[in-house]
Every structure is written in C-alpha cells, then in structure tokens.
Image (tube, rainbow, N blue to C red):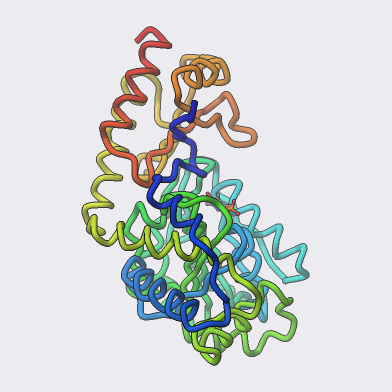
Length: 356
Ligand SMILES: *Cc1c(COP(=O)(O)O)cnc(C)c1O
C-alpha cells in the first residue's frame, strides 16, 4: 500500500506529474530541450519573484549548496546556522577548502537580522549563507529582513537554502536582495527527487568570475554561461525527465495561484500547530514558525517510532526528530499538494492511535 508521506521530503507525487517522468527522452542539444529550459525559467522567475537567471542541477539540493559556497566565496563565508542543514553548509565549505566560519544559534531559535549585522560588521566576509526553513527545528528565518541588513554592506553574496520552503512559502528573491536562492524538487514543489534549482544574480556571476577554483560539476558560473551562450542548454546531460515533470508541475502551481498555494500551506500549518498545542508543545520559537513543517516537542514521552509503525499500517508516515532531537521531538510536514483535508485525516488517525 502506498503511504501518505507527511515527512519533510520526499513527499507523494501526483500521478499526472509522475506520468511526465515516463515521457520519451529528447536530445539535450536540440531545440526542444532549449524550449523546455526557457519555459521552466519563466515559471520559476514567477515563483521566486525575480528577474534573475535560473539554473537547474541534476543533483539533489545539497549539490547546489556546495556549488554556491564554493563558486561565490573569494574571501570568507559566514555560515549562519540554526540547525543541521546550516551546519551542513559549513561542512561543505571546509571540505571544499573554502574559508568559512560557523555562527550558530540555539536549536529552535531563529537567525535574527541583528546577528547577521554583527557578523558582517567585522568586514571579514564576502558570502553569507542562510537556511530559510530549517527542517530539523521548524524555524523559518526572516530572510527578507536579513536581506535588508545585507544591503548595507558592499559586495556580499547572499545565498539562501530554501530547500524545504520554496513552493510552499512566499520567497521574494529580488525584494530580499538574495543572490542565490536554491531548492530541491522533492519537497514543497512535489516532484520525485533527483533535481535541484536556483536563482543566480548578476552580482553572483561577477563574483564567481573572480573565484579561481570553482570545481567542475557544481561550477555555477559554467552552468550559467552555458545557458546564456548555448541557447538554454547545459554543460552536461540534465535529467530531461525531471524537466518535463518540473515544467508541468510549475504550470499547475501557477494555475493554483501562488497566493492560494501559500495560504493553503499556512492553513495546514495552523491546523497542525493547534493540534500540537492542545496535546504537546511546539518545539520552535513561535515567532518564526515554518508553514511547511511543524516540529513538536514530545512532552508526553510517547514512543515516536511506535506511533509511526501504527501510522504506517494505516497508510501514513510522519518523521521522527532530526539527529539529536530524535524521540525528543517529532515532525509533521504539510507541504506540496496536500490539502487541509489530508492533514485532518492524518491528525484523526494520530488521535485514534494515541487515544486522544
Ligand atoms: C532536505 C534539505 C536539504 C538537503 O536537500 P537534498 O535535496 O536532500 O540534498 C538541505 N536543506 C534543507 C533545509 C533541507 O530541508
């Protein structure tokens, strides 16, 4: 039996989107492939409220995280972390030989603009990496306000990991001064895993031109230049099957209406938050709650893995806490094409299992 995946990615993919993945492949050097990239670009520019270029990567989102810190850091990267995914970005810097410093906040707390200001006032950095939606703690960081701070400084490339939020929460890339906003396709965009994408500003391009050692596969400048100069094509073969599905799904997303989609995510989030507050507690600072997932403090000491076993028998799956937060917290995602009705159904089943 297939399960409803209320985990923070991958999530269920609609049948019509899956069917796009089964279409016959085309040449990645033909005009059809160019037209596909162009069509995807226009739609993603709408989704991200940007005029910047769009790059696709045949990798999961981690590839673009690695590519952005390496391609755009000349001096030193400031990595602001409020959990596991922020920490990952720092590790990538170190392992690529990119000078980087890690600035952490307590788990469950947000990265505040004042903190970014303090870090940048040292004048040591030329890139800033921020996780929008920290999937391990349920925090949605104030990326727009952080962007305001970054505006005050010259020459900072602002990179945002929006892997678990893009497609479910509004991200205004240009208004927020974001140079690179990256995401994977298997979370709030609702596609099978295997591709990721990012916005790429002129400023990021100019910076990358100065960075001597950008690697090969995740060299964002090389990808950008190929798209520019070779009529919307890629240096290596992209997953054309994902591109069919992405173009199709983006059409559906825009047809739903972006505001409708973001509101639907907020409604699903409100439902789970209310439930969590009635029976448990919300783990996360309530001033910065994510609309795509809720992290719940296990105040009743239930066995999360047992709950999940019983949920699976009923056709659902939720997520245990991430890393050290396992069993101390659990996570319910509400992203992609799920509806309030689906979330209600999940909560009713949890209530029955736990005897609420
Ligand atoms: C899932 C996730 C990642 C990793 O993405 P992959 O596509 O698995 O590489 C990175 N950052 C955040 C915030 C995530 O939720």
